[in-house]
Image (cartoon, rainbow, N blue to C red):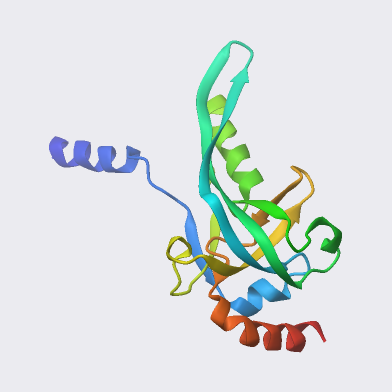
Length: 174
């Protein structure tokens, strides 16, 4: 009986991810007022790992490592109020969706030993961004950090869907 009790206690103490993955539709992405829709070409290098060092007083914690994607804007398909920040021919760097919150949660975990669960919104599609040279991406401008980030995880589509996306944008925005 003690062995069963010990095993049960160990299972309860194991760290478990409480994150909940939530799939979203293209309509969900396009209905957001902050969404910017851009046709892009990948730059070389495309994916770059960045490292943010974190210290608090004398305490040093593991750096926050994340990847950014580098593009050249070929066409702006839709931009609401952030149209001045993004122009054809401009190089842009795009951070992961919800970058600021991931950074904040990383600091909370290592500095305050607090772990929070979160909802991770993602766009399901059949395209792999690493397998193509051009794409249509769904991004937003994050004023707090002065960066572009994906609206949700996996917020990109094939350039072959451009006509369908433009039709859907006309339906939603009119």
